[in-house]
Every structure is written in C-alpha cells, then in structure tokens.
Image 1: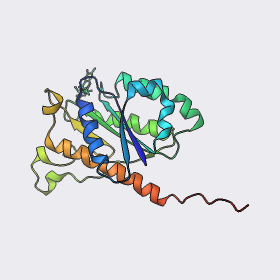
Image 2: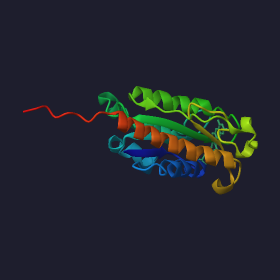
Image 3: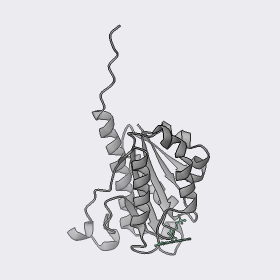
Image 4: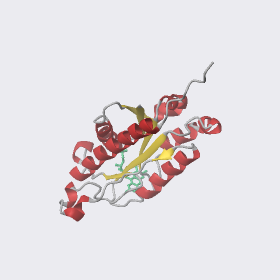
Length: 196
Ligand SMILES: Cc1cc2nc3c(=O)[nH]c(=O)nc-3n(C[C@H](O)[C@H](O)[C@H](O)COP(=O)(O)O)c2cc1C
C-alpha cells in the first residue's frame, strides 16, 4: 500500500508537520509513504493515481487553504471528471498560528474536496490526553480536532514552533492513517479470475 502526503508550506511549519505525519506512517509495516509538494502535483495531478491514500496538508490562510494548495486542488478537475481517485482513503491536516485560527474551515474544504473525488475520509480519533492528566503542552490532540489533524505554530523557526503534544499527535495521525490503509487492504477481496 502506498500513501502520499501532499502539502504546501511557504515558511516550513506545515512541512515540519508533514515530516512528523510521514514518520508515523512509516512505523506501519507494509506501507510506503511519500512526501509530495502541492505545487509539483498541480503540474502533474495524474501521478496521484499511483497512491492508495492521500493525506492533504496546508497552512490555514484567512480561514482556508493557501493559494498554492487551492491551485493543486483545482488542477485535479480532470481526475474528478472520471472519478479516477474514487475509493482511495483521504485525510487532512493544517497548521496555523492561533489556537483556533479558523483551522476547521481548512479541514472542511479538504473534506469536501475528498468527497467530490469519491474518496473515503479518515479522521483523527485521539482522545485529548490533558483529560487524563498529561500536561497540556505535551498532550496528544490537545487542540481537540477529530475531523483532521490541527497543529499550532508559534512565531519561531519550524523546529522550535510546536508544542511536543502537536508533534506527537502528527505522528499518531500518520500511523492511524497507514493502519487504516492496511485494514482496507485486508478487507478487499482479491478479484477472482473467471474460469475459462
Ligand atoms: C496570508 C496569511 C493568512 C493567514 N491566516 C491565518 C488564519 O486565518 N489563522 C491563523 O491562525 N493563522 C493564519 N496565518 C498564519 C499561518 O497559518 C502560519 O504562519 C503557518 O504556520 C504558516 O505555515 P507555513 O510555515 O507552512 O507556511 C496566516 C498567514 C498568512 C501569510
């Protein structure tokens, strides 16, 4: 099973989280994971057909995906017409500087995009660990987002901008997506050859 993390990042924060998602996905045996830039995929959207699952990542800009990420989405119109991505798994993540920052709108646009392409949405089923006593900054899913992964970037370089909890959540999110792919593979019966 192959998955691609398709992301845009202007200043490296979304890219940093994309790497954490990749790391989590690669913990799952039998799953191959690749990082792809949205700008490159906008020029060659047909390459997405080689993947069983797509994880979409964009910074939140003014409550939505960034311009380059939207250009990537729009470049997939030809794939939409033939429903070439139908049945693949999809998920989304976003990074923004404010605790809320309207990140949910960004995830929703990725969700609707995935639905229009006939893909199957995978969420972020992690209970916020601060409820069980883990300090807030270290807690998985501390931002409480189930429809996709959210991370909050402080005003620092990408390596210093994230709470440990958000990094942990990104890895768990990547692992969960890869495990979902594995489950899908196990549940898909191999096509029987018709007797001749
Ligand atoms: C044009 C623009 C719009 C932004 N809009 C929002 C926003 O709506 N909410 C928010 O919390 N942060 C917003 N930000 C902050 C970015 O989401 C944040 O800096 C993010 O880490 C950028 O990711 P990147 O380093 O991967 O480019 C905005 C930044 C820019 C440049």
